[in-house]
Amino acid sequence: MTRSPAWHARIDIAGAVEGSGFLVSDRTVLTCAHVMRHHDRAEAVFPGAPGLAPLPARIVARGAWAGGDRDPGDLAVLELERPVPIAPAVFAAVDAPHASPTPTLVAYGFPHGYDEEGVPGELLVASRQLIGDEWAHLEFPRGYDDGHVAAAGP
Image (tube, rainbow, N blue to C red; front, side, top):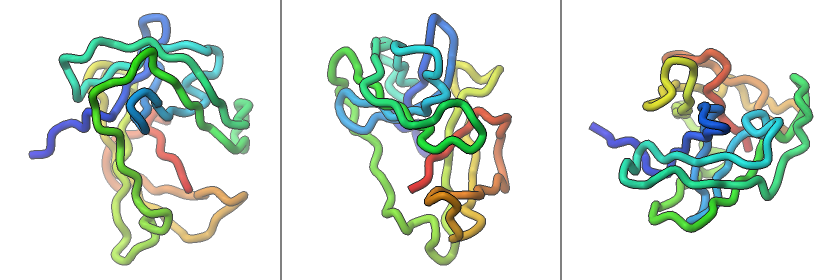
């Protein structure tokens, strides 16, 4: 059985779960801009590192996303108050989603009712065709999605 990845972060704002993210350096978390839409500060919780207390974080970069369905750049970069002793996530090669056989992308989120442990979902890239230089279509063959499990494209 595979353990929960320690680099997976839950983003809490004012005591409420707002979304998820992942550690990309010892004090940097990548999340979605829509998670931080009305906020500049949050707490990062690492469920896969149960001995680690929630860490205050602040936005240091925000993508161009403005809240519309077709806005690009739904990314936000959070800087943690201090470094954490967790190995960051490892990125796949840019062409990895288009390998044969098609690999599965596992996304993890915190939909309502799963605030503590989160829930995974499996996605497949449905086409090599990009629209606006972004992945245009991901399919959910298995798992849970209520719009709160997100994946980023190249």
